[in-house]
Length: 574
Image (cartoon, rainbow, N blue to C red; front, side):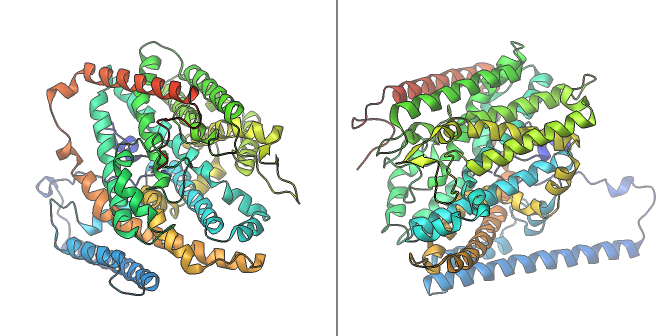
C-alpha cells in the first residue's frame, strides 16, 4: 500500500504544522516552503566570491538533477521498447510528453524540476524514522505482489519452491506492509487533528477531508488513466482495461473495497486492485474526527476507545470466519480482508500512539517514556518477538515447515485460526510501539536504521509506487516467463531479475508521477482549496460524519445478513 500513502507528509508536523494536514503514509512529502531573508536587511554584504561559488554549486546540482531525470527517462523508454518491441509504446509517449512539459511549463514554479527532485531527499527531522517504516512497507508490499504474480502467471510450482526459503516466507507476507501504512496514517492524521483541536477548539472536518481528497486523487486518477491506456493486452485478455472502463467510478469514489465486479478479493484483473487500501484509508479519514471528538471533548482516553474498537474488529473477524470459512466462492475474506471495520486495529494503534506522544509532550511524561533501561529493553524484546512472529505467520498462519502447512483441506488449524483473527492487530501494535520509541529516541539501533538517508526517496515515492506498481509488474512477469517445470535455483535467479527490474522501473515511473503530478498539485493545493465560509461551519463536518457513520452501519448490517447466491452490494458477477 497504499495500498498508502499510501502512501502522510511528516514535514507538516516537524516544520511548522501550519496547514493541519498530512499525506497518506504511502505518499511522498509535499514541497517545503521556506522564507528567505530579504537581502536589503542583511547588514554584512556577502562576498562576490561566495555568491559565485554558491551559483556554481547550484548550477552543478541542477545539472546533476536533470541528468538523473533524463537517465530515468531513458531507462523507462528502454524498458518500454523491450516489452512492446517499439520505441513508441504507451509509456514512451508518456515519458516524452512529460519531459517536454517539464521543460516548457512554468506555472508558478509548480513544475520546476530541481526543487521537486530536491524535495525527495528532504529530511523530516524528529519524525524521520517514520519515513524508514514507510519505505520498508512499500518495498515489502511490492515484494509479495511480485511473488503473487509468479504464482498467477504459470509458475505456482516456482512460487512453492521459493516459499521453502525462510526469507520468502517473510516477503510473501508483505500484505502486512499495508498495516504499517495504516499505523503511520493513524499516528500522523490523529496527531495533527488533535493539535488542531487544542488550538481551535474543534476540527474543520470539511476542509480536512477536501485537502485529503485533493492530495490522494491526482496520482490515483493518473494510475486509473494509465491502466485504461496501457491495460490492453495485459492480464487475462484485456480484462484490466475493461474493468477500469466499467468500474472506474467505484475506484475514484473510494468504494472499491465494497463494490467488486467479481467475488474474488484482489483479483489480478480488477481495476487497480491494490487500491482497496486507499479506499479503506480514506474511510479511516472519515471516522477519525469522530474518534478525536470522543477523546478530546468527552475526555475518553484514546487507548480505551482503541481497545474497544479493536475488540469489535476481532469479534467480527471471528464471526465471519465462523460463518463463511476461508474456502469457496464466498468466503470470510469478502467481509474481512479489505473492510474498514475489520482492518482498523493497526490504524487505531497509530492513533493511540499519537495521543500518548501528544500527552507526554508537556510536563507529564508517559510511563513508556520514563521507564528504566532494563524495563525498556525487556519491552523491546517482547514487541520484537511479536513483530517477528506475526509477520512470519501472517494473517493466514501459513508457513511451510518441511511438508506441513498449518492448514488441512484448506481450513486452518487452531494456530492458523488465531493468526487469521489477531495477527494484524498484534503486528500493528508492535509497529506503533517502535514508531513511538524511535521518535522518542528510546530505540537507538532501530532509529539509526530507519533514519538512513537511503530510505528517503523510497518513502517520498511510496504512494506513486504503490498505485502504479502493476503497470510495470504485470508485463514484466510475462517477459521473464516463469516456467512450471523450473528448479528452485532457476526460479530464484529469475525472481531476483524480475524483482530488480520491476522495483527499479516502478520507482522510476513513480518518480515521473511525483515531479509531474504529485508535487505540482501539492504546490497549488492552497489555491485549489475553497475559502467558502459555509465550509468552516462545524455543522457541515458533523452532518458528513453522521451520514458516513450511517453508511458504515448499513454496510456492516448487509455483511452480517448476507445470503450467498443472492443479490448483494459486495460484488456483482457479470
